[in-house]
Image (cartoon, rainbow, N blue to C red):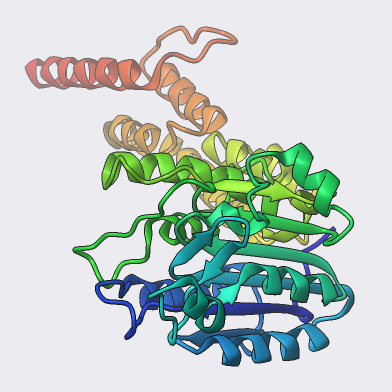
Length: 381
């Protein structure tokens, strides 16, 4: 399948943390949200820097105008639109959620209508966008109220809105009745939800998952939130999501932790290398990114085997010590260890057990004792 191509992916970041008209409402952490999330989207997900459009502390009119420009560019079967908001969310009964911006005033609802962004307008803009896939991520209080009070009722939401926006994944920092949180004493840290999102983007999923879909990414964010509750604040709200169609299956990027079968096989071979296994793996995976590791291990194997043969040709007074040291070196390579152990036993007239390899540590201890006794005996003679 290969890595997704993000040449036509566009990200709109609406990051508002400075509110001069709202006393004691500033969220300095939003600045960290913007910088760190943008870095993760570029370095981890692979979205071109030029396709990330960040609007920090802008007015409602400016943001809506720029949003309209972006959705015209972000169009077509290969296009993906990602919209992200961080700031304050103000729900108004029967009106839905409003996103606060730099010029927001909240003395009464009339002022809020004219100086904040109605999420109805954002939904309308996303509906107009002709991108095949759309992702909306909201980090604010009452975030899931974005869906006008229907967020808690998925069936009602689908019946009412499914025909409006298609192929959209909604990721919310909180439910329609919950307040999102941020580390007040750490202004240079992201808000808790965005912190979980950034950590997940960097860490990826379990090694058996080849691709990070947005749905699986969200599930990992939930797990990370649980960890943050223990680490920082037990009152961090649970995130929320809604899925339109099969939007959760959208592949965001290749899982950085992914290990395919060839890689898993190599890991096992490196733990207990043999020449035949290494050669077979290299022949079957000659273009694998880790083939150089297999070559290096094969060279090590051949060198170690050569060292054991040389040790067997040493004078008897040097042979025991050389073989003992070599057994320590090759104890994780069963075939080489058995070769060295058999050589040692032959030298000392011991009977080698067929088809059985003794525990390496016990054998080393045993060899050490025997060597000391032999040296004592030789000295007495």
